[in-house]
Image (cartoon, rainbow, N blue to C red; front, side, top):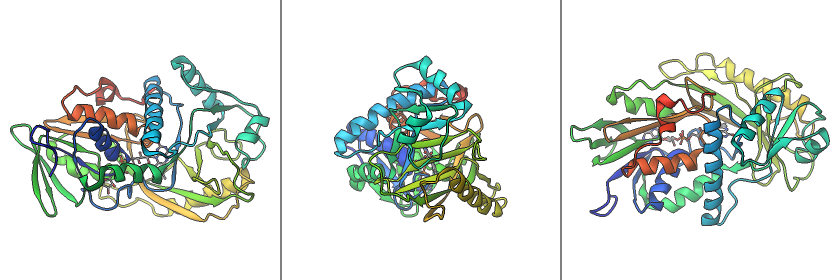
Length: 368
Ligand SMILES: Cc1cc2nc3c(=O)[nH]c(=O)nc-3n(C[C@H](O)[C@H](O)[C@H](O)COP(=O)(O)OP(=O)(O)OC[C@H]3O[C@@H](n4cnc5c(N)ncnc54)[C@H](O)[C@@H]3O)c2cc1C
């Protein structure tokens, strides 16, 4: 199914942004993996139109990782002939933004700085008047999520196998068996990049991965005026409009703007949400925030994205990679922006290089 007789036989489970980036990075190294996806590429946590690319993180190592990733997004824009990250910037509001700016400055290499109310009004014309602490990351912007998924999946072509993986089993010789609904295959190396589905596959390896799933909701709104040429993404931790965990990103074309609360609704161990009314409350709070903070948007949502999200115990931006025999498991949250650098690091580890120390779970990447 994959590779030439000289190539290692490698499988990637999951065609979300992480699995696709790892598979494409393998392709760049001259290796063709089998990519198992039970549905459409990008149907899981990677679904929806746009994502926010920001450099600001609490952990300097994650800032460096984001810088590396931004460079790869640019290279892939050239390879695919399309814009993948808008470059319209990210504005972050509140005292926390100033603290993160000092982390950015300590690392260096990111065009970011404080902005006043006038510049904010130009960068994010849909936002109400705000003259508190604000930081603009000029190298950040909105990721065209569907464009990225389509480009990567298109480049991988029939390496993507539409099939559900039921089990992943380590073999005594360090190879790995994969059983799908219609096949049993043995691989030299396997990457489990199955998002919310990963913990079910990983049980056979006996590892304790401190990842939890919860339910998230994000809403999309029409702009009242004609789409501006440029619109920044938003992170609002200021509390000025009654919420401290808001993120927002324009949808490609700038006629729509997506807004979400970073809060989520817990899942039970059996997989269902603990309290379904929690999602309805998040929708109400998001609508109320839009009405108060974003006079440039029509306050009636025109689109909704409900989704499971996964998170590691040590940080909401945490990412880690577990190794066992011939298999690697990746877990974390807010991985879209980081996926190109993560994918390249995973691809190198899959072809035999040592896994980057920062990605090992004991490094707790993302922990400030
Ligand atoms: C609404 C929302 C907004 C977000 N905003 C941002 C943001 O602004 N910036 C950012 O960087 N990140 C953001 N994130 C987080 C980011 O989108 C995720 O971290 C990232 O998409 C995870 O990608 P993944 O490939 O690990 O997982 P997924 O996209 O979930 O991919 C896993 C894939 O594996 C497949 N799969 C699972 N089990 C099996 C199986 N047994 N057999 C075969 N296939 C299987 C699934 O079908 C799925 O396609 C956001 C997430 C959401 C939901």
